[in-house]
Length: 159
Length: 272
Image (tube, rainbow over all chains, first blue to last red; front, side, top):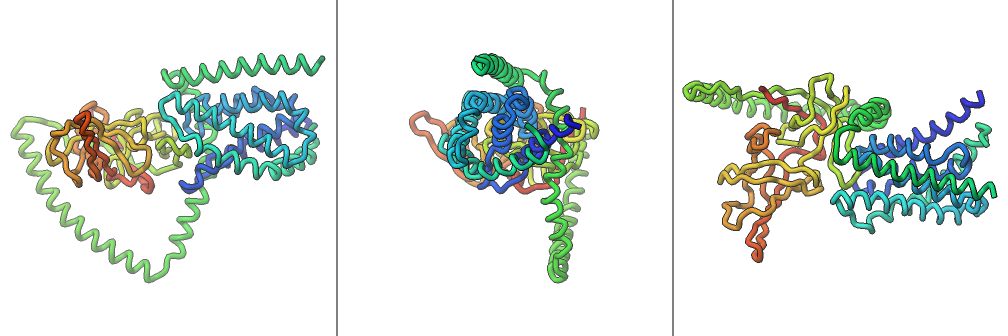
């Protein structure tokens, strides 16, 4: 029973995956927040002993497959983001939501830059400015993600 | 102290995973070994893909349901007209095909004109704005193989690059990593058309400045390279720019196929 409760985490990552592959009009593609990164940032901040680097690795592999990107591209970005999060989570957890959001913006930006680097190495340079949109939207929705996931976590009695 | 060790453990683990993901990327980029991982995960998440495509499918179903009577009549009229035109063309085609067969038999060549075709539907479009990939709903269980050409009613769309049991990933001709051997119908000049990164653009680089090209020229597959069967329409030339310094001409062409709006596609299996 207690093991079952942790399926909530997996379920939320499946929801993130759906949000990542949901078709959007062309102009909105640029502004799609990286839901996978947002969810992983929350879970690794709330339950760092449960949701760690391996979680990020496997989520990344699944994400890469479903997006059709190079296998390992989003994986690398997510592992780096979760690593930074594991270093700082104790300091960030106690901050106000608005302050957290700025920190999340920085993490999402790192995520985007890593993805852009890999694209660049493969000979598809991307305009770096175009990468600011998605982290910005991610920052704006962080408070909601945080509150919703916290409520879900408390309902499921995860600690 | 404990926190310190914890952080150090995390650092080692992170380093290991970073190296691992870079290794995975290199292997995926250079070799084909990870195809099996990809197709298994694809199979596992295919229910999600269907789920995600439901709103769009449901939307078009509702649209059909609520189409008004007059619209239906109009559409019916238009379709009848189209059918008349097409059947007229078909008659001409039959005569031509007969003539062609006669001439071919005169030449003693037994090559068939028709290719084997599988009809497939679009399942999803790759969300990465810098790639041009689509997922179709037929796979290896329907006989689709890697490298098969994909067309729609108007022209060449692309080719299959990954095959899963129930679906296949197709790279469009407009993907920046794709190149297709083409030929100008009017002048017969052969060239290679690279993807321009958007659904409306192909680039032909480094054509000699003396090449006989005009805006509006039609491009067809040349059949060289063996991937695409010859003589399928590819694109129309929209602009020509001259590089006077280096003596080259580069050409921008617009794909004939509706790369961003076709829902039904045809996969061509080459006859051996």
